[in-house]
Image (tube, rainbow, N blue to C red):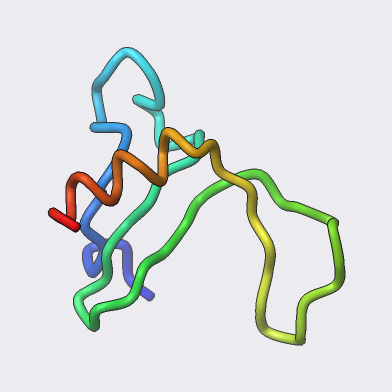
Amino acid sequence: MPRDELTRLTGKSGGPNCDDDDCPNVYATMVGTIVVQGQVSHTFEPPPGEALVEIPESVLREAVRALGW
């Protein structure tokens, strides 16, 4: 998916934290789905084509606020 199809919901670029796009973040896509960036989790093996990532609860709360939920 091209990067320009994502709207960043958390960790504003240029901020004091996560300003290099290298930490947990949540993005909305143009087709109504959510993309999560985080540390790879090895808790269990997901089905082919899927992955598990871990993000702090604070990042998820920030995304929910950004979406107005």
